[in-house]
Image 1 (cartoon, helix red, strand yellow):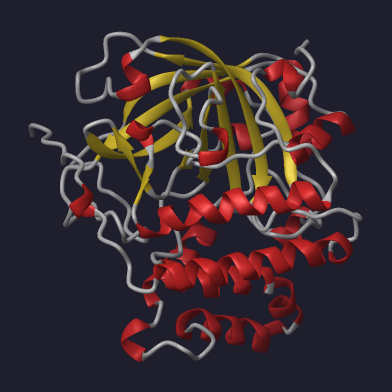
Image 2: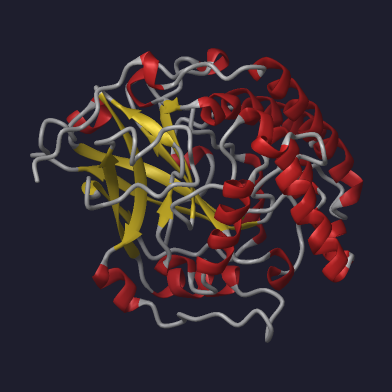
Amino acid sequence: MTLRPIRYSAEIEPPEPGFDESLQKAIDIITEFERNSVAGEGVDRAVRFAHAKAYGLVQGTFEILDGLPAEYAQGVYAHPGVHDCLVRYSNGLAHLGIDRALGNVVGMATKVFGIEAETMLEDERHTTTMDFNMINGPVFFCNTARHYRFLAKLFIDIPKYHAGGKEGTHQMFHDWVTGYGTLRPDEWAWDELGAFIRLGSQARWQNLLLSTFWTMGAVRHGDHVAKLRITPTPVSTGAVTNRDLDPAAHDEVFRPALVDELSRHGAEFDFQVQLCASLEEMPIDDLTVEWPERLSPFVTVARMSFPRQDIGGADNLAAADVVSFTPWRCGAEHVPVGSLQRLRREVYRLSSIERHRLNDQIRAEPGSVADVLPPTL
């Protein structure tokens, strides 16, 4: 079957009614959480409203491949070459704690250096980095800005629900689906709850170097629209010895396994693009739908490599705490697409500003890996 990718136009992402109100409510919820987290998380500092617990900050290279087909050689991918990169592995929740309490939905945030494109963030137009925010599942559990303002609060309250046992879980599902009782039945978030359950059931307790990560939401890919993923190469996965993790046996499993593997060998990943070929079967604003590969396969456009390195020190986690990632740190040809993605632009930016203020940290986008971490082994 010949691939006929959809061409991007503003019509494929219509404005969401009430977007500005939903955005402000989400910002208010997240700002309040970050301020309360200084005391609430027990570490005397503010934590991120999502992906609070870092498992390590890894340095590597990001090689854009030569000879790509025209529909994939778009924007930055039209310029083959090798760039330095940083990767922050993290838990997906807004809280700190032992791994088995936080669960196994994890994130991989990547920062690529040396990108010559004006970013879409007004307060840092001329930085030379490009970020990718991914989790270990192909779908997301929120579709609209309106639902996001409820789910932001719900995720912050997850420890309270868990403390309530079975009744707490039932209350969480009720609050999720009904928007704390404010949504009409025809607006109930059944699809989003189903995606959340699928995501949790499909995620595995395994070494982070074995996991595949997806952007969940769509992004512009030059003239087209795409989703992205990072997947380890077969040779790389074959080298991993500490594969399956047991959170019942140890409080911390993800970070020790990652530290151990990288101290002995590197890792390699394919960075892939899946072009949108049908707005009906590959919708932009329904993130609960996994785009079928029968319509459009993932194509490798770059190769990521980690050298052997030591990430086991406290200084590594301190650096992971300071650095910020947002999918809007990119050029115009790669901006996130869709209502929820537009909300993330200001939510991520303002959250980062507030967190750095609370922690008395300098918020400045690094110009190189050396600005963040010392050289690898």
